[in-house]
Length: 336
Image (tube, rainbow, N blue to C red; front, side, top):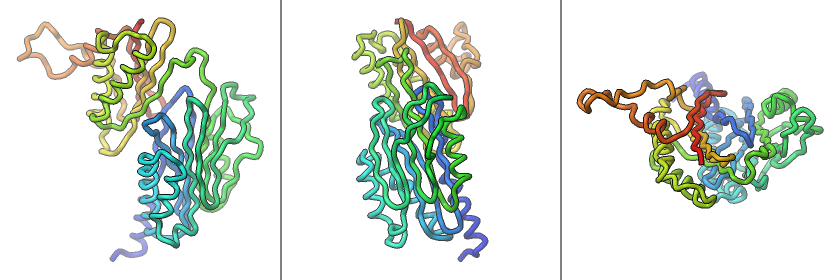
């Protein structure tokens, strides 16, 4: 048995582990997620990408005190993720969550689930209890690119009555909402921005897990993207090998915590060039700072590594790197 103090400490640790993942810098979407648990409410917000390109946003509040409720919240988070991955439907995910919770927790559950497609702007949502999931209209006076503002919230929290998108974006909205509310609450503010004119319809956003088994799927997506637009075969140009090398390096060396992460890949056709942008929230690493291998040495005396980046430089016309908000952003350009 553990004492009350230890149980409360474990509850705090479990709830801290339910904090939402970092959201990557994107041209088309901004997102802020926050939650506040209390002594009698376990709250969490969560977001992740489905393979079909839709963004899942979840906000939940479970009534109950102590460590058991925090553990139920952790199980609920995993369950909703699994159900959305399996069914790809907000209503079915909500039904699965309610069916698997014990009766006392299910009766007081507040759970909002929303799926949003950044490309089309279409949304699908389901909710139970004291919550809201849907679109509210922002005034774009300070943010001309602002498009649809989506609010996903659970618990005693008010959505903006006359939302004006601040320059700071969704984080300012969620922070203000939490300051104005009381009790346990979870919320996500999701801004679907207007598509940049230079993107047109020749853009595709993909997400993969930090798993080497996912790399072939991304390479197939690249091939299909190029074929559909009449672009040169990425196998012949070496672009697929460059993408393979970049993604494999991120999976193998980018994450030291052993946890699950998502790697985002954007493909865009711009005038006379194809641009691939890769974002990951792993350890900071600028591949452009790596030393060029000495190709004059024989294999027995040549240091291990470095050839992959050398090949990428040889087949690409430009490679750029920067880090923003805890994300590595690698941009690879191929002239057409």
